[in-house]
Image (cartoon, rainbow, N blue to C red):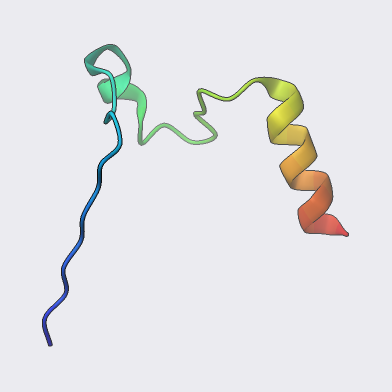
Length: 42
């Protein structure tokens, strides 16, 4: 099996790298997080 991954995004800023595996860590605004959760429930 061969898997290829390509990403053209800007990447993760170095200042938040230490926190990316913290539970519930997000860079989104709280309203966006709540909207996604409500949609998931529905």
